[in-house]
Image (cartoon, rainbow, N blue to C red; front, side, top):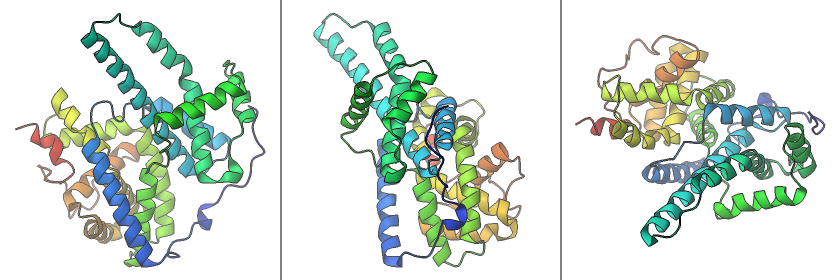
Length: 329
């Protein structure tokens, strides 16, 4: 595969915590929390539908091939997810208008084929945009993208590539600097460092990156197990699954679960202290943090329940999981 000369990736040892004033960290954490609450409230329907495993794996492998930072991978997935959901909503909106006005409906098969035929092109545009948000000296050039597409059997012109990028930008109202779970993880690690966490944050950071990749790739089985645990039923109804979408979009909950699982892997004796800090920082209950870290560990490394002194309770009263449990009443 043709590609740019591989630059040196920033190593994990280059990552530094504790260099930002506490006031700045507090403001940034508050801003992330507000964004998260808004995302949770707005989550519905098709949200999350395009974080499918094969799509995520494709983006991850492509980013690795082109030596992009990890943040670019997550950003690209989130941009693509948001864009494709918009496209699906627009098609449904058009259909509703046509039914209401009794106009001649468009060919649904043609619309589906159009989305399908342009999907890889849209994906590449999302990766390009994400690379521009990260490090300008590592922007993926149009030539590199066109060569890659040609190798896959897709023939596009430079003009089509630029139009695709503009379509993504316009569809999202040029708001592509979307929050990612990695931003929440790194912000919480920063706070943990200031709070005297016994496990070095640089060690936690390295493990968090690996587990975050796994959660993206094992998204469905992990969240499915959380749903079944929250409603104490192995066969959730469609309504319960729909209500659980808000939990899937809770990046703060995901971040604390990732960090707690990483702490258990790094030093299980300090796990309780780390979870206690995470609870005090975010307000998420111990039960919820335990449940999520347990799901991550059992689906990734097959570990036993973290913290035998704090087993998962038979009924999860966690704030973030109540949304799904409520529909069981």
